[in-house]
Length: 296
Image 1 (cartoon, rainbow, N blue to C red):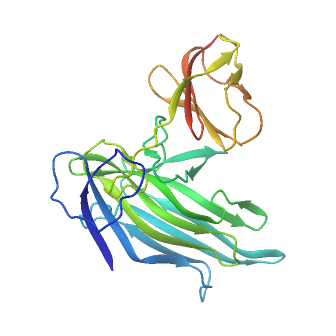
Image 2: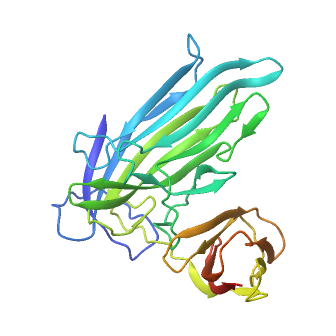
């Protein structure tokens, strides 16, 4: 049975406050509507009687009777010579494709869901709500991409449209790809009831603060250039970072995830961009680097 809580947002402390949950009436600002999926909902974990087979569950974030997102696990049978089964794990908000979107990044034109830590800001300071769906992992014969590789207790950022405007929220998941039979476990979800107001992942109104990345100036050279650009950071990448390029109209015209490594210089080629002025941003685990760059 799902439990629904309507709670005041308190974004001053990063720790969860212990004690009972106090219900409150919905005020004009700073309200988090939290849903505890109890017991947790498991998709998959067992072989279906026939293939292909798709199991799914839906998220109605604001409890208005119209679900906003669908989480699916599709299984396509065993592959000779390949351990496990073919599958795809995904979250989809295409039921209102102009508005319902998933916090994502792209690799080879495929959208992938960010997995966020408790306290990460939704949205972050990057225009990365650009797809109505995002993948967690898939495997088709030898074509395997496990971007969520046995991920536990992580969060997906969400944006959806309600009658009073756009709202931000999150869902907490386990995504298991290590066993022979994959599964997804849905634990809880929440949204900020004030339109266009940020929410911290895992904030259920009990005082989880937003981890806002420290903003720093980005070093870009040569600048201007004909496309080739060296991005220099004052820290080495211990985790994956995302590079975005934004044009003068605010459109994201380039986005790439840079794998973690021990270097603090990133050579990139922006030669496909038209001549003009751009803002380049690099989002790392702890910092947001921003710089102006000119394409000759």
